[in-house]
Image 1 (cartoon, helix red, strand yellow):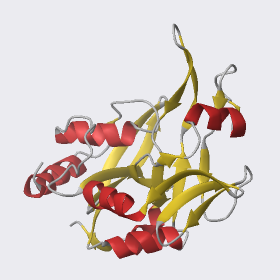
Image 2 (cartoon, helix red, strand yellow):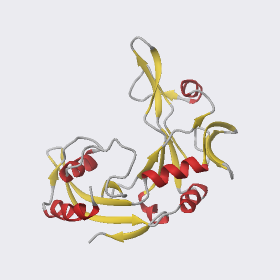
Image 3 (tube, rainbow, N blue to C red):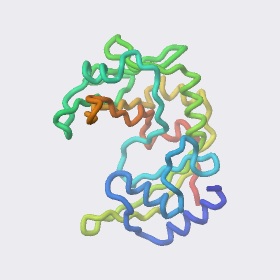
Image 4 (spheres, helix red, strand yellow):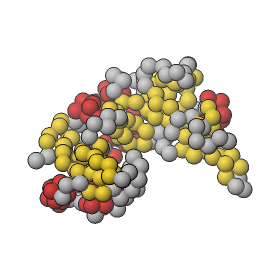
Length: 231
């Protein structure tokens, strides 16, 4: 979608007031807005709106913004990693999980982010688990998230169903590779490991990996970009 098409479409959606969610769950706020815009669900790796990634959020929800997902070079097989460092899954009793939010401060499972001049790594104590060279990581950020339009919605619940009023939007632009690298080194960006075991009939135990995610707090977006209100 062209940005010149997005702006009037956003204003039309804003003027409609509260819109019934098209999907249950956390993804409802984004899925509903994209469908109202006429976009198909984003399964491609590039930006949505003429070089700008489209993101939505509930007002007051806090939480973190996913910039992109990228697998690094695993220094240990993923299944072996889960079996060695994982824990019982809280939803699937026969499965193991290794989901963990990792920062530069060691978390309660022993994971932390290590940075050097050459690469970024997730370590468990002093053992390297997975690593990325700076160039490939920065290239992914530049490709997936060169700029961003972020739309916020007020939320109402009616008979257990969410309704969204999309009424606040910002343009984030003007980033560069040095800001991204500095944000990791300054502990502004976290790395989310999102994998678990999954039993597959016929092939036995395997791995379900939803993609290793690089994320930052909503309130820190202006540390990566210049923020502009979309009027």
